[in-house]
Every structure is written in structure tokens, then in C-alpha cells.
Length: 244
Image (cartoon, rainbow, N blue to C red; front, side):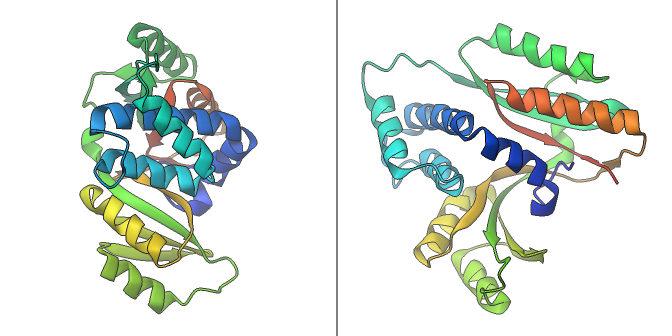
């Protein structure tokens, strides 16, 4: 259980997403529709917000036909989807900082649902800005190297040449960090070089972490994250907890 991007620490979340791939694709499609409407059209070359979502979709193995169909739906005048981005902040057990990014067509419904999940598992939803100050936004691209087929020095050079800020290696993966505004350019450049991503998106990275040791706190935190992530309106959940 972790609030940052380390691949070894998000296997639980990824495994849950893989088991509910259709739900993941639905959430990405919703994000794509909003990106088309808010970002200025259906061409990723001219819509950086859409390009970022497309990169995320491809890393999640969303079929190209699904991506194309979703963009066409967003461009069509008959699309009745009317979602907006909302962010909720609060605290989990032991003061763990939690950020929930959602897309909703009913703010009141979503806020009530997220607040209920916080309250039920020993947390509380706070005001906007109460915890986001302690996170940094970074683009993160994760590349699989479990088979050790990629040369570390070459990946480092390619990533830096593409405009990345930093590269870390950890247990069979490369984590490539970018400034949020550089994420699309870096991910596109690496994709052209032939790299395939395990994940690719702009994330909220905690500046510090809270370690949970009490089994009840760990259980409540994990359950709270699970039910929030399972909400149809939730897009991403970021937090700063770690456990043994």
C-alpha cells in the first residue's frame, strides 16, 4: 500500500484494475471525453490534455479502436455526457493525506459518497487545499524491464534526450520522471523509440510519508482506498501512507 508511483507498491491497485478492466476503460473514456471538450478538439497533436489521456489509455492496453470511438463520441453533437473534474482532499487513519480526483455529472452525489467513505473508515474529508500542498505533480512513465532486456544506460540516455528530468530503476522497472508540462512530449518521444509502458500519467507524489504499523489502521486504510477507487466517479486516488 503506497501513495506514490513505485511500481512494486502499486501492484495491489493494478491487480484490482486488471480484474475490472472494463471499468478502467470506462473511466479512461470519461476522462478522454472531458479532455476533448475542454482541451480544444479531438486531435492529440493539438490537444495536450487529450494526448496525456491517450498515453494513459495505451499504457492501460485500451484498444486503439476504443480510443478512436471515444474521441468520435466526444466530438459528436449527440453526446449527452456532461462530466466535470472535481478534487476532494482529506485524511485517512493516523492523519494520512488523501487526494481523490473524480469526474462527475452530479457534484452533490459524488461529494456525499466520497465523504461517507472517509467517515466510515476513520478518516475525514477536508477543505480544498488541506493536503495538496504536501504533494508535487510529476509525469511518471513506467517501463517494464523484468526480463532485463533493456540496457539501463541506453534507457537513461533516451529518456533524458526526450526531455525527462530523472530516471530510477527498481525491481525490474524503469521509472521516468517529467515535469507535468513535458509529460506528453517525453512519452510521445519514448513511444516513437519503441518503448512500451506499464503506466503513464501525471501523478501526485507525496513530499513525505506516514508509516502505518497498527493492523487496524492498515486494514481501515486499505478498505477506504478500495471503496473509493471502486466508485464509478473516481479517476485517481493519491495518498502518503506506507505499511510494513
